Length: 131
Image 1 (spheres, rainbow, N blue to C red):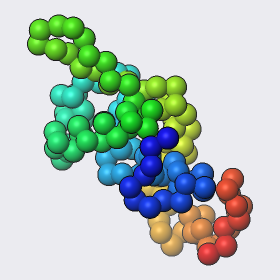
Image 2: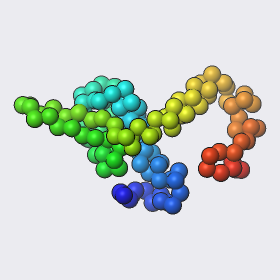
Image 3: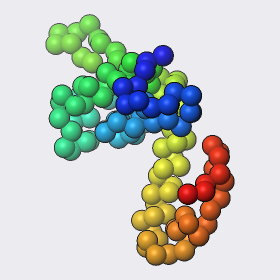
């Protein structure tokens, strides 16, 4: 298992997942891959602001964690495609939940009690919210 370089506590499941998908651009790259296989130029078009160097680094990280598969086709010039592995697809429910919360927050203003976590504390899957 790769060791995250950010000092995350590997005995905490949330820290472990975030150490894999929490780096800048990683979630957006995964979001693109939920649509299907992608080539480098497709990522660059879909993710304005990401550099080729950063994209390559993030794809290598995600591949090293077993979330992304890199396929090189024996053609001239070589064609490279990236796709999600089964492990990478396990992240999809997390992304759906983030999307749902984001949609809710876009609709409700910050002062709206329905979107204020301090007024609506509920337990989470990984423990009670108390802060």
